[in-house]
Image 1 (cartoon, rainbow, N blue to C red):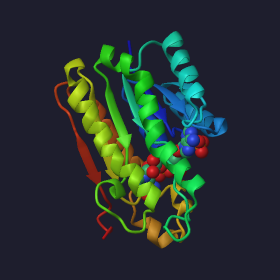
Image 2: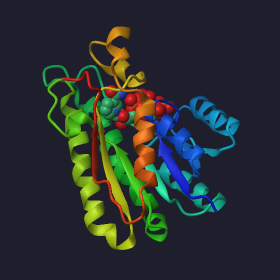
Image 3: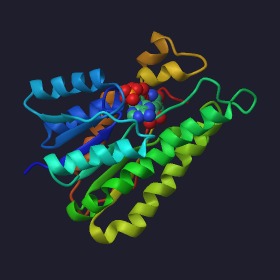
Length: 238
Ligand SMILES: NC(=O)c1ccc[n+]([C@@H]2O[C@H](COP(=O)([O-])OP(=O)(O)OC[C@H]3O[C@@H](n4cnc5c(N)ncnc54)[C@H](OP(=O)(O)O)[C@@H]3O)[C@@H](O)[C@H]2O)c1
């Protein structure tokens, strides 16, 4: 039976690319995010090449949504064998001088608390399947990046500890986690920057597919191999 991969942020960007790659490489893929139409489009792409996908809309900030989707995965397909956690948020108002605390909380809820909540819901499955967790963090979570934003930097930096705590505490069950830290990726996410990059700047960035390929490498690694952290940047990034 094909293993089950649950992907958040699967309607666009890196989550979409990772889901498409995994489906082409033997995984049944659960596609989660808020925009059902975007998830449907990812599912159609997967289906057109013979892959298997389940569309499971949710808001990662909502505990009931996570529980509902997790229950439908296990009821319909079985235990989760892997997670790709790509749902993320930033805000153009990202400095101390112009950020708002509600926006700050929203970023922390999406980038940190929701990642922990999805892992928490799937952990019994991951123990059963010796599962793999890939957390899409950021270069800004690996090395301080002054323009990334206060809340964004804080949330992404914390993901390193979250992954390492999983590795330290759950390795006996075969669970492994990778903190994947991409640099600039040409995706919809760039629209959340105070200065949105133009096409010339985007042309030298990573593509979502570059990250999909890296996620596939982590998922495909033999069960005794753990890729604790991956930092991937475009050559042009300073
Ligand atoms: N692009 C970059 O340069 C860059 C660099 C480093 C790290 N990252 C990180 O990479 C991850 C993926 O971003 P991307 O570049 O691929 O951009 P993207 O296409 O905008 O992907 C972000 C995804 O997160 C989902 N999402 C946001 N809030 C959500 C919520 N509350 N519930 C469920 N899903 C939610 C969005 O789907 P819905 O709107 O449909 O919910 C969207 O599919 C993010 O975590 C981001 O922080 C991006």
